[in-house]
Length: 144
Image (cartoon, rainbow, N blue to C red; front, top):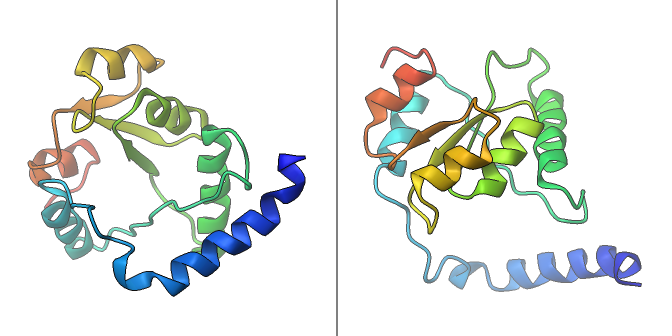
């Protein structure tokens, strides 16, 4: 029954967001290092995308990463050298790896470095935070 209502719920959520756009970000904060990292990546002509998918696109986060990749390819048919998924939960790490992206875990949430590493199949990179843009970019093979 709930699955049948997902399209209506999605429509209502979008309507609410449009009607309340001025207060949508209240209570949210940009974590330390994020703004300067985005600036540094942009200055090196790195394409940056934000995955904002709905659970109605798929119930599994890993599939959401794949869906985001498909949609990005539609926007940039020339493709990408590397896809990176940054997150601060074990589910973010698992989703990135399942979705074929490089998983970068950051310990800015409630999960420890050990917990994030344990959730990985071994390929995830775990950082304490995103304040060191140079290190982040070096991990991606980008000279900043």
